[in-house]
Length: 109
Image 1: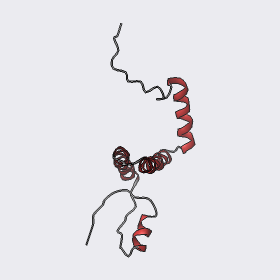
Image 2 (image 1 turned 180 degrees about the vertical axis):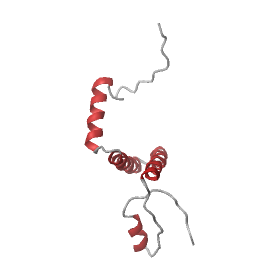
Image 3 (image 1 turned 120 degrees about the vertical axis):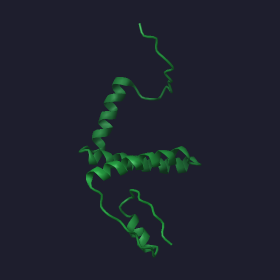
Image 4 (image 1 turned 30 degrees about the vertical axis):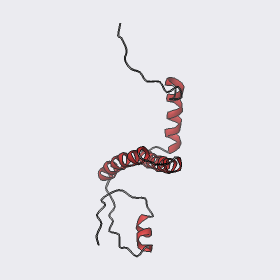
């Protein structure tokens, strides 16, 4: 039986497939393809966070999102530390999401 995935997977997945007796067909993506598949994977991972059935499952899906952010940062020439430092700067300037504020509207004057 053949199952078609056409999706970005973690580096060890082909070896895991082989250890299960399966034959994976893979190719290395060029830069443009890689970025597009990172974006698609981000949407996939967001949906998995959204539909997680337990806190433990949500934690695992958030870990996948973090790994994806790391890959996106490195592709863009940044380290995860660079991204965390930028997040800290933005938090210092604009705050975080701790207060759970919903901005409904603004009356311009």
